[in-house]
Length: 468
Ligand code: FAD
Image (cartoon, rainbow, N blue to C red; front, side):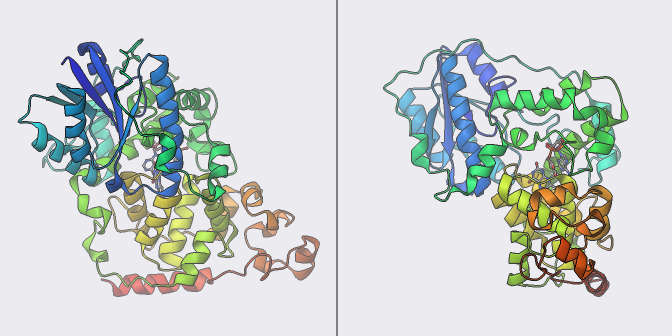
């Protein structure tokens, strides 16, 4: 390759970026490009992250002497034009594994394979590509996590990571780039301020985030990861989703810490991400359909008012409302609380998991087709290795167990801040004098529960039984 294009997608970093690494070592001219593809249908929170991440990538490329070219449109149309314009003889990219990403890759290959332009794609985001791990006996994809991850660990080979290129050739000014601000990735209303305040975005920030986690919460991750009132997890999910850091970089850095149960459990979470990609690659229909056919005709309810109350954090169940408000204000929610709010939607409200997945898609900075789909189906009981439908989270006891002092609830639902711990997860049961002392008017300042959990649980179990 003499004049090669490196097509950035969900790999917005310079180190351990196989496509960039290859091109920088072989080509004389390197053209970094990012294409805003309307087919991606990015959620609003993801767009905010992308805007900042592209700024950071552009600045990093500039430091190496290069320039990021921004283009908009369907890659299968933009790339052939760009190859002509740049007179490029090579195109390199890192593969995506979701159905849309796979389709685009196939289109690009079939469009350009007959041309003079050499095409090369790499694995830049997973430890193992989805087709590499299959069950020993049947040689079929795995549907259960534990044997899948065991097989991955058996297959663990020597992972290595590449350093970032030291220098890149300049991109001549004659090649035009879109202005990032013209893409309008940021919403017109200033809803996204909370996201900007809560996150540092970009490759350097991702590396700091990893180091802070290794130096701090990792040691107690086995217990700390379940406590939304503490900073017990890595918060690497959005960095990973946008490829500001690679799974291999994380895996190797964490492997460098002393062996412990906490380390093992954390690496297994990276394994769940791998498993989610494995499942979506082999069962792409799960984006819209449950993996378990029993749920295809499940009697979900339609209830716009209750769905709105859930989205706005006004269900009357403090741990649910705290989670939904953390999501709205920061673009992220703690994993334990994601499970609680998802169970509440699918089981207490009996609303289809897809309505929840859609809301998460729009509001999560880490919204990821593979992880979001797998986890919603897991909670709803209809997916791979899923929790059984009849396991219904009790939002009161979950709150009491995982937010015992109510710190998490008080942070995100400030109208409950003055309630004593005893009532913080069940304000509607508090005696009147307690409510008065806490200056809380139930029903006006904070809602009464929109459903009775005990009754809702029985209703859900009855519908489940009927669905057989
Ligand atoms: P940590 O606990 O530090 O975990 C490290 C990394 O492991 C995460 O960054 C993530 O990449 C991966 N990971 C952890 N838990 C899971 C899991 N259950 N499934 C897959 N990967 C996991 N995660 C997303 O990245 N995008 C999503 O759209 C998403 N949607 C979810 C929807 C529901 C209903 C639920 C219950 C979970 C969802 N998750 C999703 C998984 C999980 O909640 C987040 O990955 C995690 O909370 C991110 O925080 P963290 O980086 O601090 O995680």
